[in-house]
Image (tube, rainbow, N blue to C red; front, side, top):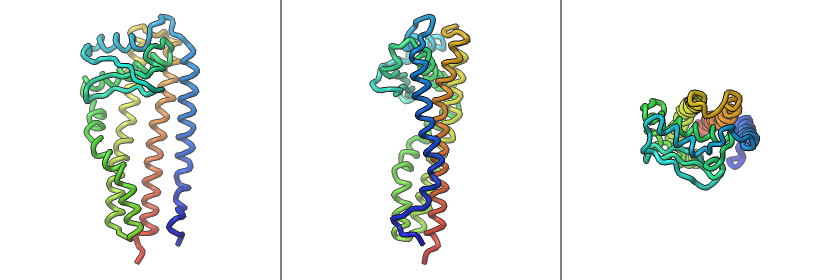
Length: 231
């Protein structure tokens, strides 16, 4: 048996780690590329977000500015849309694509999009699972407690569910974003291609996170098999 401090199952995470690194580099590279390409209309991302929200009857959803880079998000709890410093005042194709993506989430919220509702509902459970799953599991290994290991795995399944549900939420928001940008004429067809490249690159970060979660689950199951049968 391997010593406790040496975990050979870490090798299972290497493909997922490489994918995550590639996804992060890809999204930064593509965003930087299209951040230097201004839209022909010259409208800022914040103005585009405001216009699209109003178009869909979401006039009560404010468009706020938040610090950071690519910290853009829509919060369904207080129904606010926040754009990062690098996006808010920019009129680049990349910034407009990101802003429209967040509007896509606001539209999902209005339409009661099922995957978004499921994701919002399990967030509290995921918070507990992500913070407690690994400590419980490895305490179970330390004290040879199979029940604690199983509880840790059970809690981590909630994290897996969150990542799985996140994929359709993000893909759908990007699809909505590109459709409304094309329908409203805020971006031309060639500009839509650039915005789509940015959103596709961003989607890989969610795919990578899901792959990593499954790799972690496989690792836990391997460890459960290694240590769960010990006398």
